[in-house]
Image 1 (cartoon, rainbow, N blue to C red):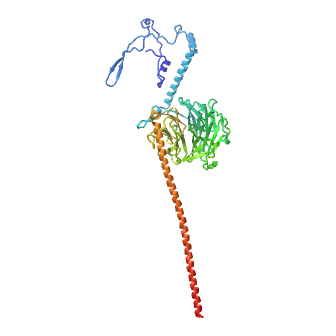
Image 2 (spheres, rainbow, N blue to C red; image 1 turned 90 degrees about the vertical axis):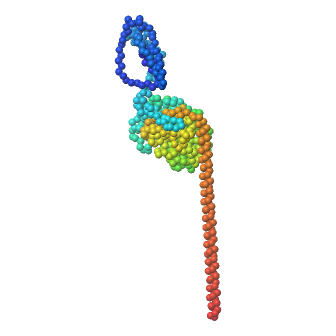
Image 3 (tube, helix red, strand yellow; image 1 turned 180 degrees about the vertical axis):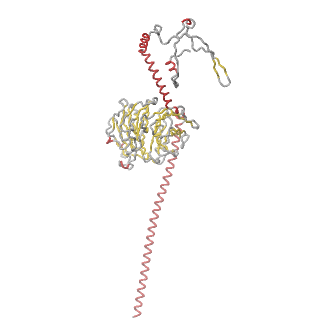
Length: 570
């Protein structure tokens, strides 16, 4: 067979994974025999096979006949007028050929494809245990997931991957914030750097972000995708422009920043795209404009007494703002297990805190509205994940079972309204579908041995990334069942939310009736108690009056008796 040029053979199979291997190959030059040139000097088809089929009961087998024929092989790639034995002529021809634009374009294109396949092969060599890892759970449909890649913290001292943010347009880029969340336990030689990764090149980060203090949260700007906003462990806010390098463009002034770590930053979808706000456990929500980071534009203190006292304020751990909603409200998840609904337009209202939702027993680490039904939102805290309705304040409408380990983060699927994801402290990723099961996940995958602190789903599909305590980000690909909108799914989820909301309203009404009846009974009991005391007082006064009257009668009789005895003696 005539060998095909390497770059053509390589391009023919670029859609399949390449398997590189080392082998000992001996090359030997065999000059052509001029005596045979007249016999076999014609062009022939290399596919000299006669197709024959042999049909069996189960399978079809193909056999062929081999034909031996001589082929006049001449060193390829040289023009007819070029003498291949002349070193100077061949060198000049090579130099001329390599200057050709078409040649350069072909070489660069082939080199990029080769580099990509080589990196994929290196990734498979680095993580052989991830090649065919898959978990399938038997149900009416078969949800499954498998780990396809890992992004490891390149530093020796490992930090927690606390926040993840996908690029809004380039779905291969992922921004990861690294920090140590254990109070005063950060290692001395810990790096402050965070990174932007290209998930196709998992060996090293594409760009490094160098903050003053470790970043706890990080978010891409959807208006200008070159800009990222980050909240630091020391309470400062800063933003980066990837066109300007690794250093932050601006940082907020320390005296006007948060006093505790910033756990969440959110961009406001305005025309300019420069407004953002941040939440921290110091009990404040600060509004910023990145054009002037010297001080915040507005300040909200999460004081339940609504007096603006920071000493009594709730510490903010998570936050959610849906830009598509008409009402300018946002939600804040607190350390105390409450969800606080706040008004964004602080200058037009005297009551920025609208209401509060109670039900959790610990800090609310994740808070997100359903992308299809914004009136319903998901919370992840303590040992449960809960779904709420804005109309019900006292309790959630759907709740998971109590797990044995803490839940640390969660988010909705961007393509299916009934699916959401949670991660736990034991390194497990749970996938939920409330149309099939409310209390239990439909798929559980043991991702790693350390705790999973963060999770984010790519908007265009269900590519999931999970950040662990040791700074490793694992990329998981979901099965088509989990990333394809099912038939009538929106209508079924809407009906489910409405049904559960009505049920909770009825239960809430019954609870209020019982509470009012109990209160009225206690009031009646208190009124009856007052009447009894008054009756006892009257009875007591009548008793003493009767006693006094009897005493007076006895004294009068005694006087009469004494006066009669005196007259008798006289």
